[in-house]
Image: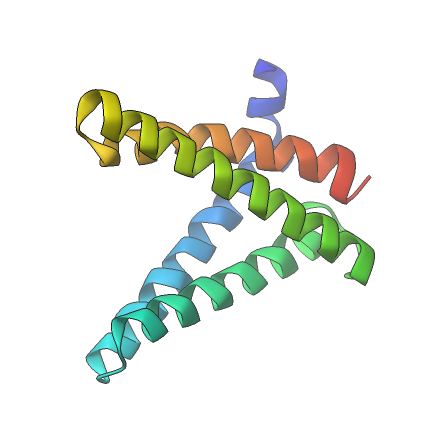
Length: 124
């Protein structure tokens, strides 16, 4: 597992995730400044970040072509990781009265899970 986390491909995967998070948050903030309702701004940022994330990992991280098959699998992994994050947040909110702690704990779990499922299932 340590070798996987030290691999160049995993580092590119994490860098792509950071880039997409910046796009997500940046677009949301821009739209908020332009007076767009927060729910629409957050949704636009999330959707744009998600699409950029898919394109980045498809072409750059794993060197594949986009297709409907790997996009459907990608969306399944997004759902799994979203559920993992929600579980961590809920547990942390319940037992520690601190949902942010759960969100922070979920980040490496989601990154590792996303990478392994991408490498061995989405882009196999």
